[in-house]
Length: 117
Image (cartoon, rainbow, N blue to C red; front, top):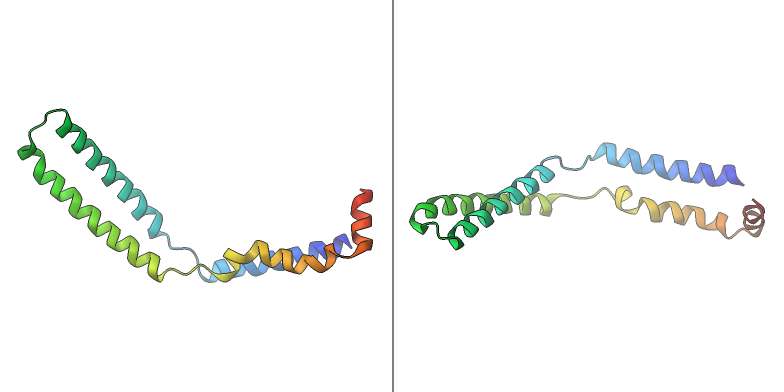
């Protein structure tokens, strides 16, 4: 019975892995999010400088530049998020495995064997 459970799990896992290999997650997305975080930190630092008395006229051009970069990154991230699709097996692999294991887990003989060990 344990071999049957192992076989079902292995099959489901191989299905999930093959789906991920066919459609790898977008590699650009994490880099864009990290860049956006960096720009937001720079904006916060500029605001802190203003709060501490730095002249606005000197910081205004840099603030406008950072805001433009932020807007461009948010637009790219939004575009990727709209077009990105998660492979079905990637998001549902655990539930898929459980669905396939469910009949085995309901088998009284298997439950009895599992409880003995």
